Length: 236
Image (cartoon, rainbow, N blue to C red):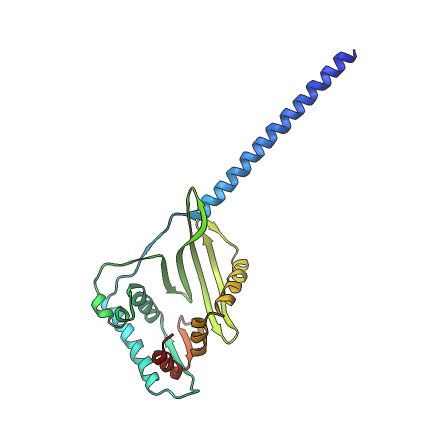
């Protein structure tokens, strides 16, 4: 009787161990699948985006902005704050001119770039409906079977004042994975706080008092024109 009982107990124990082992294997495989699926959603190969080819309309808007800015620079005095208001077409024209330029000379003489084939950039920026829509492909230190790049898609509204840069994110995703905007805002705010200590950022912040987007879809910039003169003279 005892032998039968002990053999029966062994069988039960063996079955329990098998169930536990099978469960652990299934759980490990499931965890691995979830991890791989997450990595697949987030990581990818490097992406590049076509710039908007420059058109005569882009150059016209760019020249209008440069003329208004030049007039403010010419009239500038130490301590005087001026305002520059850019509409949607002007902002997108400047983005197109900057994206297609490889130097300051290219930017200033954008007319020579009209009709040329679009360039490949690791980013794409469009200003529309009171926000900037941005696509950005950046490398990480992690090599995965799917790639080492994270392709970020962000839609939001930035503004700047004496306290720093503030972000109002409408949506954001890393690859195919949507991220919670409010949590990302906090992370980006911490990152921007570090960049605000950068010397170039400090110089820009010394020039721009505040910048924001109006409900009418205009970008408004309050700045010190006189300080731009100093920067152009001294260089960054």
